[in-house]
Amino acid sequence: MRLPAAIALAAALFMGLPLLILLAAWAGPLGWVAAAVLLPFATLAVILWLGWFRRREDDGPAQGR
Image (cartoon, rainbow, N blue to C red):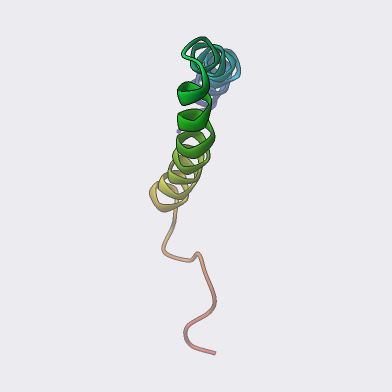
């Protein structure tokens, strides 16, 4: 991912995630519960996906030592 795309993604998340939380609050208690359960899993999934997508051949422990 190039730097301009990373900056655009960070800005979108910086503005979009609070809006998502506000929408969950507007939905009432069920929205809060759904946000509390789904947002951490969604965040973890994005982190794991980015880690898998950005991996290289030489990442990880040395195999031949």
